[in-house]
Each structure stands twice: as C-alpha cells, then as structure tokens.
Amino acid sequence: MQPRLQHKTALITGAGSGIGSAIAELFAQHGANLALLDLELGAVEQLADRLHTSTGRHCVPLLANVTDAAQIDACFAQAIDALGRIDILINCAGVNVFRDPLDLQASDWDRCMDVNLRGAWHCISAALPSMLAAGYGHVVNIASVHGHKIIPGSFPYPVAKHGLIGLTRSLGIEYADRGIRVNSISPGLILTPAAERYFETCPDPAAERLRQAELLPCKRIGEPSEVAYAALFLASDEARFINATDLLIDGGRSQLYHA
Ligand code: NAD
Image 1 (cartoon, rainbow, N blue to C red):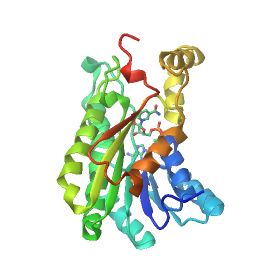
Image 2 (image 1 turned 30 degrees about the vertical axis):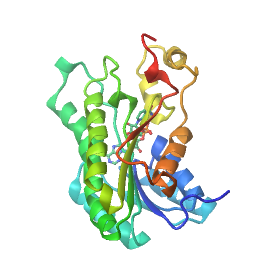
Image 3 (image 1 turned 45 degrees about the vertical axis):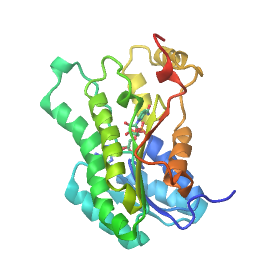
C-alpha cells in the first residue's frame, strides 16, 4: 500500500468516537502523525496508544471543548509543539440537537451552533496562522446531508450544518491563493455511537434501523470508514484542485424525490 499522507500531520476533532476515530485510524495507516482532540480524554488516549502500537505513528491525545476558543488555542499550540506543524485539520466534533422549533430552549440553540458551527471556526482560526505562514494547509469540515435537505423534526441541527457548508465555501475562497484548501463532507446516516443513541430513543430501535436502511437506495446504512476514505482523499495532495466544495456521502438518498 502506498501511504497517501506520509510526512503529513493532522489534527482531528471529535476523534474519540465514530467518524472521527475512523478518520484517525485511516490517516495513521497512511503515514500521518496525529493530534486527537476530544471532550473525552480517555477515548483519545486509548486511540492514540492503539494507533501508535499498530502503525508506529506519533499520536498526541488532547482534551478540549471546541466551544472554548482559549482551550482550542492552547491545544493547537501543544499540537504544533509536539508534531512540528499542522498540515491538515479535520473538524469532526459535532452533536445532534433535534427539537420542536417552538419548544426550543435558548440553551439548545446555543449548544447546537456553538459545537457544530462556532467550534469549527475556533479550530480553523487556531490553525490558519501557521498554515498561512507555511503556505500549505487542508481543512475538511464534517457537515451533513442535513446541510442540503431538511428532515422534519431535526431543527436546529440543519441550520448549523448549512452554516458549516457556508463557512467551508467562504473560507475556501478567502485563502485559495495562499495554499489553503477548505472542503466539507456531508455524510448521510452512518452507523456510529451517535446513530446508535438516536435509534435507542425510538420506541422500537431495531425497526427504526431497518426503516432507515430501507430509505436508502443502496438499502444499507453507511459505515464510518466510508466517510474516512473521502476525508483521506480531500485531505491529501491528490485533491489539490478541489476547494470550497462539499462532497455528499449518503448512498444517493438525497437525490430521491418523494422516497
Ligand atoms: P459521535 O457522537 O460518535 O462522535 C462525536 C465525537 O465528538 C465524540 O467523541 C464527542 O465526545 C466529540 N465531541 C462532541 N462535542 C464536542 C466538543 N464540544 N468538543 C470536543 N469534542 C466534542 O458522532 P459521529 O456520528 O461520529 O459524528 C461525527 C460528525 O459527523 C459530527 O459532526 C456529526 O454531526 C457528523 N455526522 C454524523 C452522521 C451520522 O449519521 N453518524 C451523519 C452526518 C453527519
């Protein structure tokens, strides 16, 4: 296997679970040294140990809440100290906030926007100065199919994910002539601990899982590694002419009309 991220460094937020963990695993297999940031320190410590043992890569676990700009600045300084630089930033930390719009508390709105949108901006603004100084950097934001299509009952999550795609396009253009690319990935339903938690809120979790699979043209739910392969491509130099755009990974579901 030809490693596609050899001599590269990446900081991945939300690396402690689901899609973020799968991206970390694939990036380490492809030669990247990693900073793994999450609210759950134990999860990123375990992952860092496991990936170091299996791939020999340098993996630094970092505890931070992406909503706290000071914590994020401190973590980026620590990551640059440990890894030398950050070539790639993957913004994967995110939370589902699904409410009836008229029952929505101000705190729900704030949490949704702070984690899913402002958090990504905190990380990009922490990464940009050193990326601009190097004239090199790739950012991949993990958005969602909710940033393209609306599923009733999921407010205000789609508002944040539309914003994240807007952030991607806006910053991609802003820094395009200075060696920085900013793209996003919009996954459809992917089987992660967050998706499992959603199924558990349903009266019949197994039936809901089957119903969701049935809605997809390919009749199955996506896997975290399938998003990780797209992140690997977008974060690599293979994608050097791809900027300020979004890649949907939803098994084709969002192209269906009246499914
Ligand atoms: P997950 O809950 O399994 O993992 C999310 C990780 O982010 C967790 O380790 C959590 O601790 C971390 N995190 C949450 N808030 C944080 C914060 N404030 N600061 C730092 N870390 C924080 O979720 P997942 O399903 O792997 O989702 C990952 C990303 O993919 C999210 O942005 C989500 O919106 C997006 N997404 C998921 C799906 C899906 O079906 N699973 C679909 C579309 C988009």
